[in-house]
Length: 440
Image (cartoon, rainbow, N blue to C red; front, side):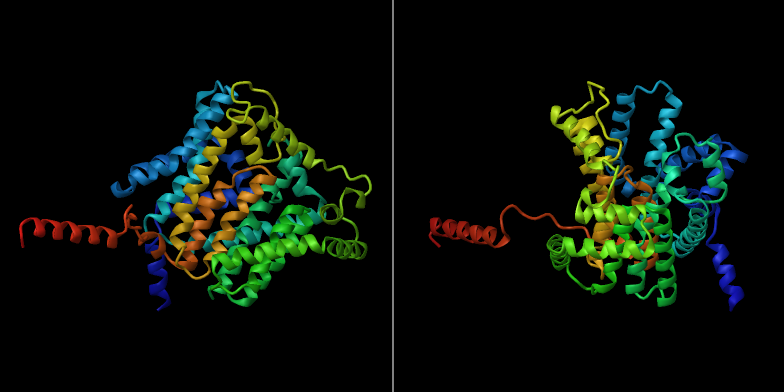
């Protein structure tokens, strides 16, 4: 029996499986990225990106071609505007950056429009995150703030970056990617796809890694996602948003009490950057002596740039008027409402393709939170998190819910401008008038 299962497993594998597995672990594990750039050169990965994107276009089913092109159009236009804004003279590099940006969207659309081996790819994702989570935790204990240092290094050839990569220490991208995908641990547990022991182990590992990496907003998002354990999976979206609003009100009303608890915890475990930032969040800057994080002032730089020219931003002026700390605010500053409109179209496309098909599924409110998290993070930090949205999330979703929500999407019937019963009554009235004229 086991032999038959093994044979069936290997029959499902093909060259596409190995390519996707490589792309998944490449995005998760720094040691893989370093190995490729060292032993295979970066050009080999560039060539793979080109081949993968072209493959998704060539193999796109005719019935999905129009939807695929409409889905990708805002992403391509956004990249073209960026290339024009920065006047990059290297055409080859510019084209590669565009393909690199849209590649997760291309792969994600390709996957959800046909059956694929979601269980295998989800296993690869989980193993990759476990290994990198452990090595990141060990590395941050051995070299405090290593994950934060990686976010400040300007070149990949920096000796410190090289050493941390070979130690497989995840930086800013890995830490936040882990947190953004954590709600699916809760969903898998709620949907009885994950037993309680693996759930506890994954939760403990995630908390340990985030705390040792010292990313405050990652810690806040992680705590918020953990609260999903206490919500019934059948809760409606309306009640879900009401509970979130109530939670926000409770936090605002009892801010001082929460701040006092955080201060007490900080005194017991020792002060850290996370404790300091949480105290600032609830008690204000005066609660931490010498607090140097001026993120609010940096956000105001982008906001002021946007209001100087709300329509085009810095698009034609090319002034350096951004904070570099917010994907959404920086886009508004650089490209005005044009950039804002493109962001709305991109997020709308992501929702329609990857999240709306799950509208009738149990636990849809968890999907809403999984969709909203990256937007919130893009507002307070950099990156749009397309690899999370379009690559990792759809694979895990299919492993939990199956492929039917995507492959058998309900086509909504167009709503008539005039109600059917009104039309019928008018038809009957007209028939009566005709009969009367004929003398019937």
